Length: 356
Image (tube, rainbow, N blue to C red; front, top):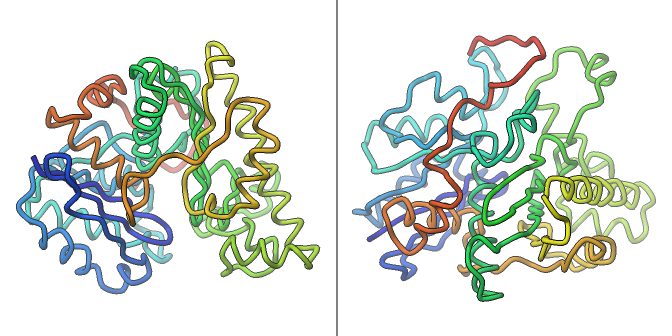
């Protein structure tokens, strides 16, 4: 059985593939290069055909669905992008999904956290981003990590996931091998993302567009919007404004982590806080999190099962395997991905423009 998983990240698109549990695909393409030449995406997957199933880049996700069955309404819910919006398209995701559909690659869209039946409905009210589909994929890797690290059954895996990506940060709660809550990248400060927008500030901004969420984060606070986290960390050693940016960033992550402990039936069940994403490559970030969050549980870096592809791409591949009845089927069954339902636009009680 040959399966592929893809992560459409802010910095890179990562590709990971397993053939009967042996790695046959492990690569990455810079997002800016893919935006300029989307054919690069298809060069990668055409180079490894035929395959049995691909978990396609899923954005804000859908209840489990074949790409071949996608409608334009589905596309809107995956992208959450109005057609009238003239801003730069998000990583060419819509264009790539439409081509995947036309060329009939065996592929599926996977759900985001909000679609999952394991998350109580009251946690979904007036929320869209509890964690995008790629965060669900990363959680799968964390579940495998704990199973192997502690020699436990799936139902005994309990942890908090912190993923610090190139642009966005997210925190998820996993109890008994199931995702029970999440705070998505739109709600926590990221390297580039501002996180939650204060209601009064939203009023002053007026018409809020996607571009507002891709700025206002660490790099913007430091005064250098195009810098990486590593560069801002270096500047923070001497520059007060950069240090302020890092302090605000770490505070946002810690607040979210402490807050999500309330989702667990018993806080003592939390075995680990597992760290993932590009941001944890910096020891200063890991050390800061460990110094504060050890009060909750052991803080450590999540295992990785590839040399290049990010954990979210690995998890997407594990999902593809599990959906086809492979090694990871018990993990995927326990996550109840096949029972996902609804829309990210459900349970919203604030008036907004509903037309795509």
